[in-house]
Length: 103
Image: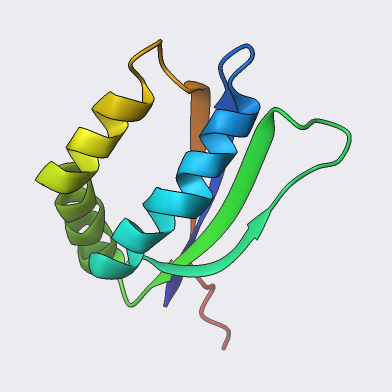
């Protein structure tokens, strides 16, 4: 089992729209493509950011799920529609976490 920690930083003035798209649309597509959400988090001191943790059986599954999500025509249409006035994300960071094998 591996985990992936994601951090999204909204474009200026787009935090509410970014979070709305994520909660309303993105999570549905994650489920469709096998991206298992452990949790979604925010930092009250920085409302422009959104964090979430995912889990996958292995790295091959992780890569396949992200590719399927990113190429999903329905997702691409929603992304275009929600970004008609400009991008919602200014930056994103990913940290892949793999367990250490103890003794």
